[in-house]
Length: 113
Image 1 (cartoon, helix red, strand yellow):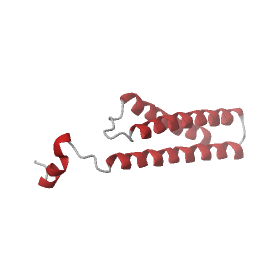
Image 2 (cartoon, rainbow, N blue to C red; image 1 turned 180 degrees about the vertical axis):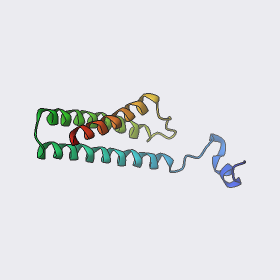
Image 3 (cartoon, rainbow, N blue to C red; image 1 turned 180 degrees about the horizontal axis):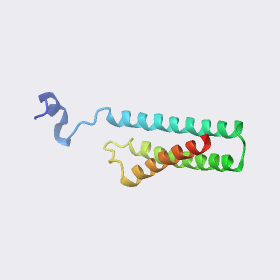
Image 4 (cartoon, one colour; image 1 turned 135 degrees about the horizontal axis):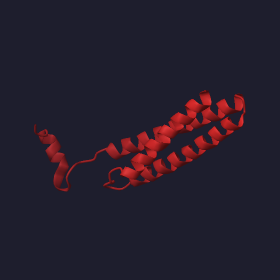
């Protein structure tokens, strides 16, 4: 299957035309960071209104660290996307993002139980 003729015209001598894709990706990272912050705040709320046990306090501390790690990774990636030709997502960044997401989910389940 070939690309439409107008797509070939847009590509020009440099290769592909990124268009607004980096901007959409930057916005997606910001939305994900906001969602992560909401999870952290809700976990803090649950721990404060819950039993206030040592486990809950440790859970909130872990969630805060995971949120800070995710925010750092996301901020680094958003900065990288400001380049004219941003590089692809590195494997380490993808693994760190996945680890923070899974860690937040595990901590949220632990706080609920």
